[in-house]
Length: 312
Length: 303
Ligand SMILES: Nc1ncnc2c1ncn2[C@@H]1O[C@H](COP(=O)(O)OP(=O)(O)OP(=O)(O)O)[C@@H](O)[C@H]1O
Ligand SMILES: [Mg+2]
Image 1: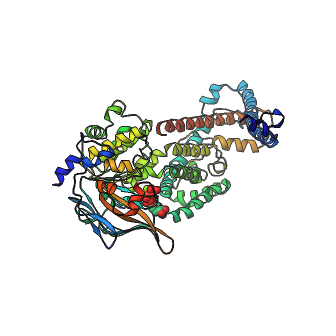
Image 2 (image 1 turned 90 degrees about the vertical axis):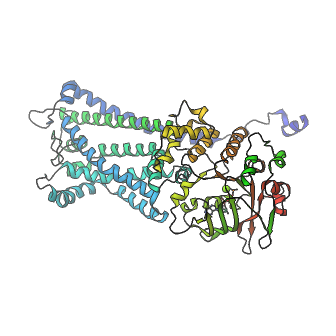
Image 3 (image 1 turned 135 degrees about the vertical axis):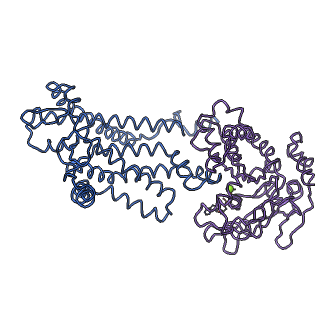
């Protein structure tokens, strides 16, 4: 044994030592660290660049006025900065979108994962995903020129040209693929043994899908919902085109509304002088939007973790 | 006559090790050799639950199981043994139409349950599966509480019962009640593999089936959990008819009344088809097999 070791390690060197330097490892590691750092610093940079003008804004306008008054007229001679109408607009349109997208998205997901033949699924899933590739500006004009004029006007004759309903409905259609595709992925990942277990107890297809597969995929489905809602809250183009730019403090979806995003887009592309209070208001609204989306994401992470703990 | 023999076999005090098989196997061993097929068919299995006559199972064009003729007796434990890929699971899944869930799978020949062809056009597979339960290799508990796992079957079948009583009864029969009675609300995933498999058995008997099909129910369990499941099977055989697929020769010898040995034949095109080689009382299969392939397999020289 001793002789064997000695012969394979001339000069008494440790035979277990690293013989070749591994430069590739270090290079790859460096590139990966850089990639992570870029995205981290970008996020950080965005937060800072939104935070500074926002803080300047709140030096002039109180939190109370911003959060609890109901008139948003930053471009008027006598500007008022109550953000509630924008929040209301975002809320109403998001709720409409979610009411459309969750049932249809989850329904398509259940159909695709549990009912469709493999052939049908192979055609339908990519088709559905094409919907996700349509530019939102196209959706916006579809809402304004088609849904409002040919679908909603005949039903609600006194609907306004720019209205929250058409924007919400079309936004709902836009996020169906997000919800359907992610939910379908979650359901497809449910082990087939669970389905077999349900069928072996005499369960029908519906009982298996709704009472075993959907609960088993719940963490993924909830994540899909939250991502869909986040997309709805952050969506800008459809609302700018179809919902109008009047900050109305109303729950009536037949009226025009302005959302946080469409205010940012409209004011940002207008000729607001840099450094003015109007200019800073854009960042204040942006900060609010950021906080809302951030909280949503935290909630979704919590929910996913909760169901995962319970079920896996 | 049969019932007398049965109670002896399931006597809990009876010796249960392989070497003592001879003591327990005092059942009808007069088997006849079916010359045409070279298959040993036991003369009598008592009351027939399943009658298979010339059963073939296909996956598309591939004939996975060819020409199986056998009868499965009531309140007996029948073991299916044989090398991997010889179609044991395929045949077992055709007993409660689980194969319907695989696109392209189909059954030819007669597979009758109490005289009713379960593949007749007017038969509802859901009714079949209600009466013929199944336990799988991997414990497939649902992502629900222990209680909800047991209650799922009765609920989907619309059984009007006192659910608390039923859950307790089934968990008790599955020898799990004492271990879980204080945390029925806990997720079933918190249980060990052996406990999960007993929960699956409790879930299965909650719909009051007559037959329990088990496909390698102990394959992912340690010897202690396996012994528990085996004891449980012997317990349950008093009320249920059990068919079990196993790769464990000792297990087949320990628990079953009858054993069917399958193997895969290669045809002229080089395609493998599963076939029943020999079927008879477990004791005679293990001590005096008629077919040399059976002998090779059980003595470990094959497969
Ligand atoms: N879903 C399926 N589709 C097509 N062929 C299948 C399918 N399931 C099994 N087979 C084939 O049928 C044959 C029998 O398989 P089966 O699973 O019944 O064997 P088995 O005896 O249970 O094997 P094991 O002991 O490994 O579980 C094999 O050749 C297998 O490849
Ligand atoms: Mg198998």
